[in-house]
Amino acid sequence: MILVTGATGQIGSKITEGLIQSKADVRVFVRDENHLGDLKNENIQVAEGTFEDMESLEKALEGVDRLMLIGQDNPDQVQQHLNVIQAAKRQGVKHIVKLSAFGADKNSPVALMRDHAEIEDAIKDSGMEWTFIRPHLYMQNLLRFGDSVAENNTFLAPMAHDAYSLVDIRDVAEVAATILTTENHNSKIYTLTSPHAENYDEIAETLSSLLGKTITYQAQSPKDFERDLLESGTPEWRAYDLAYISKAYKGSDKHLITSDIEDLLGRPARSVKDFLSDHLSTFKN
Ligand SMILES: NC(=O)c1ccc[n+]([C@@H]2O[C@H](COP(=O)([O-])OP(=O)(O)OC[C@H]3O[C@@H](n4cnc5c(N)ncnc54)[C@H](OP(=O)(O)O)[C@@H]3O)[C@@H](O)[C@H]2O)c1
Image (cartoon, rainbow, N blue to C red; front, side, top):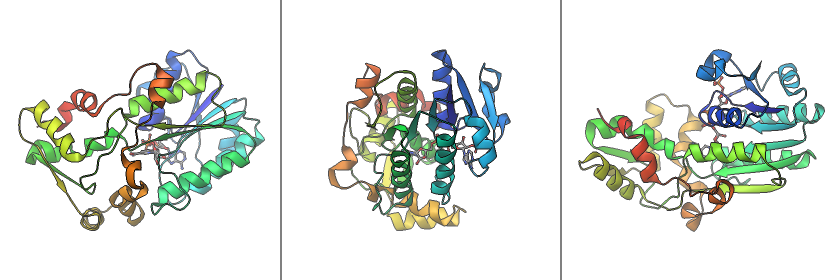
């Protein structure tokens, strides 16, 4: 039995779909089963609970061999996931696959990266088998610019003019489902990137050619980006991490390219152009 946490989220839901297609035995751990959408009608077990509620965690983990651990960035994330690890150990889970992030580092200036590193260490120390999936920044983050592109033909981000090897969450989810249903992934870290690194000016050029009009990228300073987020009601911890995320990647790390997706899936990772083509309606009025 495989338990997927965060199964109502963007990656967890896709992993669950992949596991259903592979005919694996799946249980999902959700705060509210009404958030499951179409997955609610699938042949899966549903366990309701929260990372804060040990009793619900222990119950959900009964009879589980493999755990796909996904949560949401927030200031309590480490304690939430320590609860899951403790409950998994008690219930005899053999293997934890953790959705982490490329850039996970105890000394990162970005809190979510420090949190991922701390959780990874706790999993290693637990004695259970483990696999860490470390995706680079998601291409899906670009969807936040949809309205701005559609209405003003431009988008703002605090990413300067550096190239990033962004990754498509569809590839991340397929990798996770593959790891969960095949062998020989113990003690491995997979770093997931696209096959090319592009800066946001190049992304604007690709959008321009796909939309048939000129789209521009405006590099905003992290400080101004953070101020705008705070003014629009984003919590302080989140505004800081979003504005200063580029600081999580040192030097050439920003545009690191790995073959992990192709090695695991037997096909190349999706490119930004593939991604934008598939989501073009988000950038149109
Ligand atoms: N954005 C990026 O560029 C990027 C890049 C690399 C890695 N990551 C990592 O990706 C992860 C997020 O994945 P995602 O985008 O799929 O997340 P998401 O769509 O935000 O989903 C988060 C899931 O966690 C569940 N959850 C939140 N708090 C919970 C709690 N207290 N108890 C039980 N479940 C809880 C949510 O359930 P509800 O439906 O009840 O809210 C939801 O299913 C983060 O760890 C992030 O650091 C992000």
